[in-house]
Image 1 (cartoon, rainbow, N blue to C red):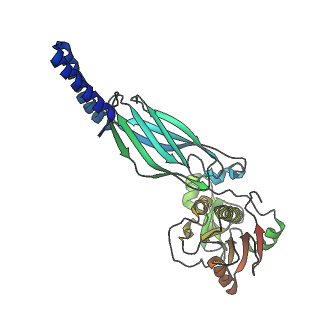
Image 2 (image 1 turned 45 degrees about the vertical axis):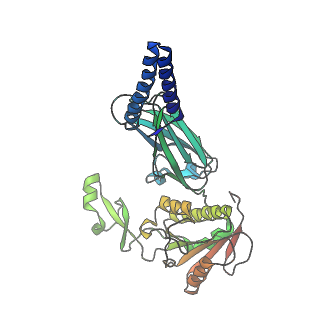
Image 3 (image 1 turned 90 degrees about the horizontal axis):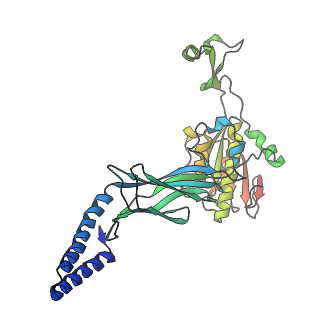
Length: 375
């Protein structure tokens, strides 16, 4: 709780009036000076009461997709485990809800909320916070790829006369993870020719459970999943992954030449991941010196996109490249540890290729790309 200059002014004014009343023998001036001092004391109590009854919050309210967003092209099934209320892609516009709520009792106020988010300083406030709460929607965008974090979130409360103010600093929080743009690269002739080695086989008769489907004439009875059949009221059978299902490894440059190059690397990697996943494959992402994506999330599009959204600012990890039979490197210069890891996999018999965002030549099959999107 800090006093303001208004408080000192009120105290001085009260003292001047009180002294003037003593010399002029005007009785009501004594009362006026005492009222000023009593008002300052009352505002101290009110300010303490107000600061303990107001809380601030911030949440993502809505997302307006950009024309380049892949959201409109994704099948409905892909959104089952998508971030809520909606996935945010770079260049989208987002609506943030800043709220002031009363934690108990009647209406409070005044209160002001200030925050730094998305490269902007936002400050909102109201003289009265009703019991039902007070809300303001701020629009931000187009947002860049990465973590959309809210920092320097400060709640300031006070009294109606502005004699005291109380500031409460909240911890930084992540509002959303802004995902990279992507699109299918399967229409590219060069990519299609090389990508034939990455086509995943269909579910079959392997050892790892893939899922269940409806029973078809000719299916072995031992593959019927009786518990699920009883729950659904129809026969369903287990499907297994065939042995040798390929996992595609994405090897990313740990030190991109520029932020624009890093964004393009993330877009290309996301596009390759999408093409692999929708054909039934798996994807693991790795960046030298950084924490790789989790193997148990190799089928999750959103997990890979979130990893790519935070690239290259990922937690430090010294684990080596994934052991895969197919790998794609995404480079911003002809060299570096990602290319070394790709060539090592090639020496072990893995199928490899690369994307180069920038100028130069590579000794492995590669495609060159600039920083513009779409390609």
